[in-house]
Length: 477
Image 1 (cartoon, one colour):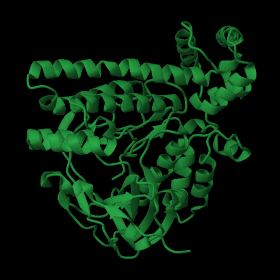
Image 2 (tube, rainbow, N blue to C red):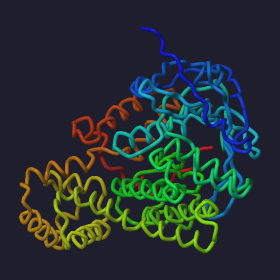
Image 3 (cartoon, rainbow, N blue to C red):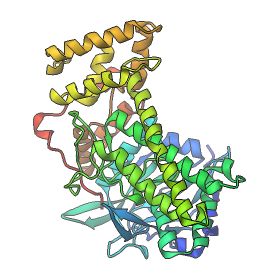
């Protein structure tokens, strides 16, 4: 079979120079392939090229660069940028789609801020596993094309295997990119970035007179949809800083992320989030906070009068909650097999979530149990308050025109049989670091179609042991 060739374009280099620094990856000693995403490669027209994925070879047409951006990290504004990542360029597919091809862990850049620019194998495989699981769940996300080990040691708390991840994204334009332009650049720099973003992600609004207001509106719409999808599967990003909010509406940067086991709104996994800023229940609030920072950067483009610009931005930001609530309610209704929204649905859903919290029920397993009328040994299902709720739910199902079978099929399509359980991810990562890749491949195979409900998925869906209930995650540096 003929090797597919890269078809690079480099539109980002047409932006003003303040937005990037041209930078080559730093070659590594002895790269070896750990995993390659064949299906993703086929869809974007890429092939397995080890030296490219290691940063040792630059494909024809690529113009490598490190992107500059800033961001609010836990509420504090900071100058950032690609401290360990290099954007090789933009791959143009046969159908005309455009995707960023980025190497993560590819060496120091002018934005490294004292870091070594490298990455360890465990965090790179974590991003591979979780991002591909998110894609299979139908959640917009950056994706992972390959992971290679470098043959070098990365020094952290202990010596770790070095690795490079190849990430594929609609783009790496972030809220933090706009903050950088607003803080360090000029109004014209913000305008150039906004125009570029519109052409790349929202071409349908490019000719409108109020296109910058529409840009804000479209980004808000995408984030409202995205965050609702996170909440519906119990995904906790862990570090929702403004530099980790992609304008495209994709989930980006899988550092201290995890999936909730026992349902509790205040769940936090990140070891550094000691005040719960990015807890599960706070993710919609943090999305609005981030979007407000984005709106602030656009104010000079929205109206010549600052007060009027602020009013316009506030009106758009206020739309988030209605959009988010609509997406979330539609998704939660589907998880319970409900068609045709009714006034009592919100209380039915809210009451069930409160029961789950009270009885410390597993979030994913509980909805699976409802789907197939199984108790699975959880104490929730033997409680009197659940039986009262169950009677209300059944009455609601009986009152709709759809049959019970149709409701069950709706539930099956919205309640995954499998998520990347934290203990299973850790098991796969620990084995991979010891040279055993079988557990990771088995996990990825099971996660590939999360709504399939196969026997293999049952094995990977088992709940963690009690000692795993205090699971913590760490930023992957």
